[in-house]
Every structure is written in C-alpha cells, then in structure tokens.
Length: 152
View (cartoon, rainbow, N blue to C red):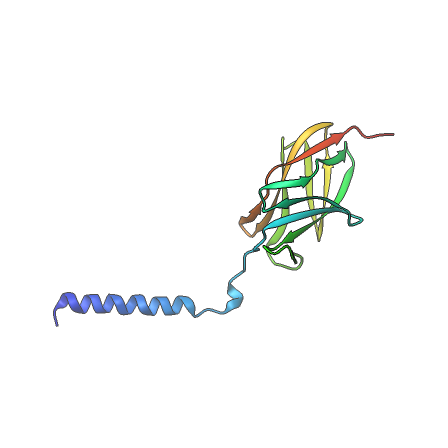
C-alpha cells in the first residue's frame, strides 16, 4: 500500500469518526428553533386585533394606540397548519418589537404578553420578531400603527 493511499484512508477514517462524534450528543444540548409561520396579536380580553397570513402581510389593522398610554397585547405564534405554538417556558425565546421610527413606539416584553406604548401622535410602523437566543426565528412584515392623541 502506498503512502498516499494510507493517508487517504487515515483521512477518511478521521472524517468518519468526527462525523459520528458530532452526532453523538445529548439531545438536550440542541435548542430547537421556533418553527412559526404566522403571528396573531390579541388585546388583553382576547379580541383578535391583527394577524399575518403566510407571514407576508397583516390582516386587520392598523394597530391603534393612545399617546402615552400603555396597551397590553398577547402575541401567539402559529405553526404552518395554524395551530398555536407555546412560547412560554422556552429558554432563550421571546417576542420582540421594532418600531419605525424607533422613538415612536416602545415595546416592552412581559411573560406571555407585551406592553406597547405610543410616544407621539402620528403614524408609525411596528414589526415583531420571535427572538431565539442570538437571532430571529421569525420576522413579520411592518404593521401600521396609529398613535392617537390621548383623550381626557
């Protein structure tokens, strides 16, 4: 057997062993991604306000906020068949909101819900992200937000 053949066999064996070693880890080490297709946003009473369809566009809306007043929302992730996905209790997973302009709307994540506050009357946009440790597993399209002056 030539030296080159021995080296090729040794390299192949090392790759095979490395591949096997990579597969032999406890399943608890792997944190599964959130396989969400859509989001529903409901008010605290459970009324559906808006939802995405195939995460391409929002149905309903705009989301209406009163200037300076917090509104509590419940966000539900949906799988590809429209069934709810439980996010509570998942380590490293939360729902975040990004506003455009950033100073127009504040998103405060809470356990199982979020508090959203409009900071200035006018139009803004908000998109929601299912955040998984260091990256987003889902990013929604922009949702129009109408921040109205607070009444007396």
